[in-house]
Figure 1 (cartoon, rainbow, N blue to C red):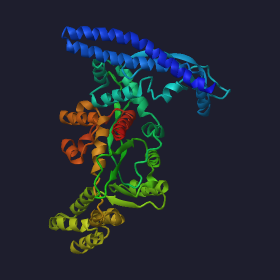
Figure 2: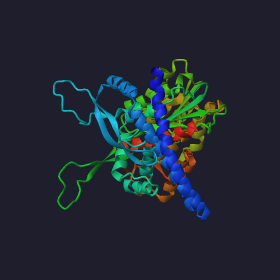
Figure 3: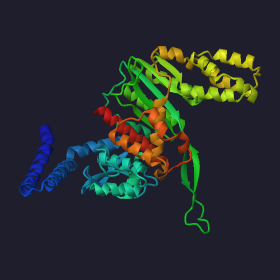
Length: 497
């Protein structure tokens, strides 16, 4: 009986596909033959494309019809829904969008969150419902996952949702601007652990085993538009908005070879969030656990001098990787040089002119922080309470073990954080008003996001500066979260080949 319950849906689906296939194949074959005989190769090719799309839609319709009518599956859904605190209410007719853009109507089992008897509301969505089977299949707002990500990519690249919708319509996919906006909002509002589950669905994936792992992270700044809730001022047509600064945080994970160079055959893991620091830590922890950080041979942690990195991330690595995990901490060489220059510039003008930056930079590269402090104090006769001495003690002395650049290079390890600098710019640029982005940068995005390639730091820094981004406005948190998620998915898909 059990074997019959398994094979029956398969036989039904095959029978349904073959019945529709024979009709469509005969019709398409006749059309293609006539077009070829008349010499219209272009139309014959287009007919073939339409046939393959129709074949894909036919397979999807047969699969969905069989799946949604399977009683055994419904019983499993009831059990799963019970574990999630959901109960089956009814079958609702909904319209879903297939990968080809074709829209079909199906009856989907609709679950709602179980509420206590006291104060229970009437049955219905009430924003508490869930088409559980569609969610398990990866549909996003009743749109196929692959098509949804394609639409979100266009929304992030195109100047507006309307233009993204027009591009899709030219490709034969009818998704309105409001629908794309809802897709962006839903992906952006996905909880961080669920987002990682969507990316790392293969539990057998363990790329860190016996590998040297480079973990780099950084924060940025961008403005977020928040509409004012006051009455519309007289003479104005809109409420207006406030533009508060927010600080997105991102991380990149690369694999290194024995020479300390990035293994380019393995695309990196890139993700981030605009939420608070605890949520960022939780996101990073989920990645580290799912990727098997405890099996890595060594972790190289690279970042700037931000206290939140060095106060929390090493403890997180010890927690997830175990006390035996080898961790090398490095402050980015470029950031260190910049802070040294700022410290020397804080000297009085006459003394600043005599300061030999090249000499102090050599001492910094050798990791001789104590010599820098001693020479500044003796040669320039600076007091301990002076600004430069406070800067040296707070930034350099406290991070002396992380500034051993010569020794780090001798161990064939990276001393810069270019990987995170080149990763944070695309994610933040995707979430700003695209009308303000120069055409040269738009060309850069198009070439990289579609091909799945990863930008190099030097190429990116030439084309757009971080200062440019600080004057722009993010549409909302969901746009940034969608940008990081889609960028992560693009990198991960390339890794799967």
